[in-house]
Image 1 (cartoon, rainbow, N blue to C red):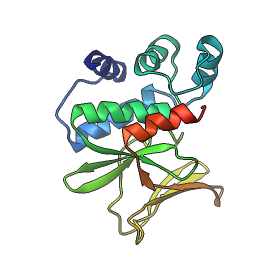
Image 2: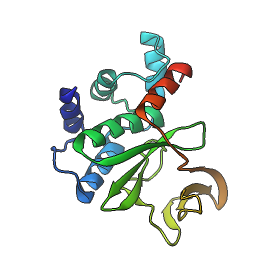
Image 3: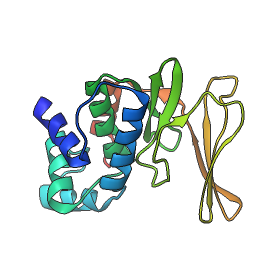
Length: 189
């Protein structure tokens, strides 16, 4: 299994280091620039291998190397979670509220950061969740707004296109990896 993590780092063109904020930024930037958010791989593996569930780690990495694949929010975020955990980050895999896609909350020096590499968004670095005001990312006609935590200690992420709210999710549930894997066995992708 350790070989897979070193292969993952090689794909990202980064070296193993001690966990820290700057290193986390480097990992997230590499992930979103080198591993695309896409669903073609799901169709490919369904037809070629008759797979309808989350692909295994080895196949995920091979698809990136051989075909330039990446994955959806499920595979991209799930395997990034595995990598960050192996590197020693204090990370929680969390489900959002759009049929439970996953995001990460990474805690560094008692500050929470959102990491979402599967939303097809410009989240190219960790986003602080210890906000007192909205955190806004503008890109073309899109505006992403990350709200400060509410009374339930949940952050909301909203996507506006041409000024109209078109999508949003909250960092709702923290999942164990057991829950995450069993959820894939029950639900086809």
